[in-house]
Length: 180
Image (cartoon, rainbow, N blue to C red):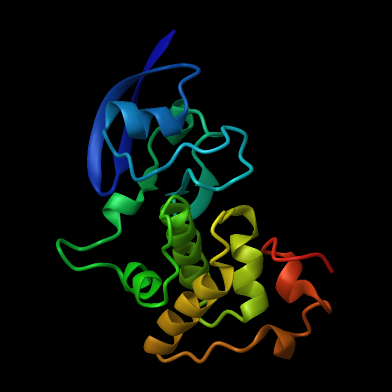
């Protein structure tokens, strides 16, 4: 069974036919040719397919396309403004937080949602936000530094994880860098 949906993706409006079981990930990659959103685990565990749905990070591999009816979707392709990179994209590059690049789109969008909601996150809050995004290259500390630098550029000094009453050891185990 197919459904006609209206969805806004990266500020472009679409009316498109989707199968009732079609995933948002497949709509983006196959029908709209927005391949920056990566296919990883297909189980919502890796975060490679993270997009913003009405400003909130979601795993596009777990969202049916019909659930995007009447909603706003932001993918990594919609983040830059023309040739100018978004500050997070620029910071990820400057801090070496982009290694193989596979997790980067999801990481950038997840941290954008964090900074939109909390422009002054602690290291613990940054790590907690990205806990659902796996980086197989192990660039977690560089990602935290990149997010911290963007917050600083916008006049906010990000506090360290130890200054915000984070659980002892939480600075490492949230991002898979070890166990508590």
